[in-house]
Image (cartoon, rainbow, N blue to C red; front, side, top):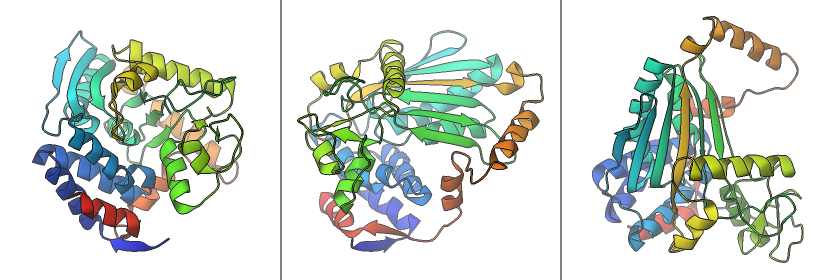
Amino acid sequence: MSTVSLSLDEIYKLAKETLISNGCDDETASILADLIRNAERDGSLSHGLFRLPAYVSGLKSGKINGKGKPEIKKISQSVIKIIGNNCLAPVVLDKGLPELIKVAKENGIAVLAITNSHHMAAMWPETERLAEEGLVAFACTSYKPAVAPAGAIKPLFGTNPISFAWPRPGKTPVVYDMATASMAMGEVQVAKREGHKVPIGTGLTKEGKETTDPGEIADGGVLLPFGGYKGSAIAMMVELMAGALVGDNFSYETAAKDNNDGGPPSGGEFIIAISPEKTSNGNWDKHADKFFKKMKSMGNVRLPGERRHKNRLDTGPRNINKELVNKIKSLS
């Protein structure tokens, strides 16, 4: 694979200029470019520049409002509702998370229910931000059908990621962000682009056969949930929490109204934040640290998020797929 070396500033500039030239205002472009740069910085390649052409597709078709602003409504003491107005989800989160943080710290727990926004980024940025404020966080969102329920060979669920973060005052938080599919579709697409095989159990061909070829999965095939029926149940939970619970669509309903331009569809997101200061006996941090030390003493154990946080310390340039960079430049 041929690559080109780009500094983190160059990655940000490339993303922002591309977004502005395709209909975003400065605020939206800055927020999303920052997210894309941070994904590349932290090694989350499938959520960095790789996603930019899809964002542009949604902007060009008019599905995504690159200049839109979300509406924030406080429904009750602990429930905040945001109507995305076809904004990109990072913009919605930029406005909504400060409100969620404030309410969770005041009341001990708070929910952010998001509708009608376009989410295709990683989910760790929102939960990590909450954890950095001393809050335990959980988030989930659905997508268009790409994953077959256990026992089926046709898609019904989205890749339906979930993210969880645990605060560690004075240290980087413990954060995971995972698809409930056996592999995120973005990872499958990266494997296809780079000519890698994927493990058996990742997905099926369009004929319903097991395969290690990511192209057969990405092009008309179907992903499988991780862990069989257990992952299938968690994917179902995400459909309910990011769909019916927040007042948005299930993945199959999202697909029915999407224009299939290649950009992220409109959908919902559910986020909950909990203050351990209010729910615990006051010893939660030391108690959790004892648990994490026990984990790490048991062998080659890495806490979720550690690899990303280590990558973050390297502020040098990143090697980006040259074909991808040229494609992005052609979009401006």
